[in-house]
Length: 175
Image 1 (cartoon, one colour):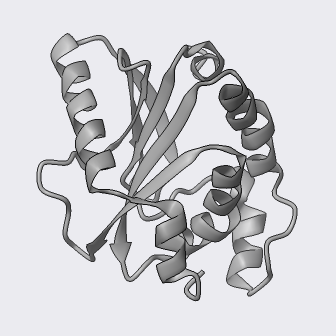
Image 2: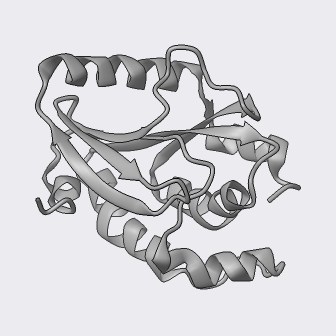
């Protein structure tokens, strides 16, 4: 499966539910270390590519690219990094990023505790990660019942979430 093709082939919407408090992504390691060292946002090629190759072209074509991230409070270092070095910039480029803050150890009732992408409300791809946040595999799900369930969860998550700009106003000093 060529996973990246879904980001160019979707016609209307691409939605992501994020559930982890840390993703171990190799292309972010250097920047994450800089963030932990107190440096302000520098050049971040991985996010620049996401914006230039995915977000801006999708928005220019009238497509909606959105995500909801369930984040535990207090925010993990990684979530603070993601907010400051990623979300701030992808939102400016047109991605609709939303967050659901919950207390540490809690989870929103009725929401799954795993990541997935949902393209055009009909293509479901579950994302599998190891405990440390390392990406393991993406799996295309063709079970109609699970696809309908993912749409329900998307609508529930969007309804319960806070748009990133409002979240950032509250937490700006943290990240």
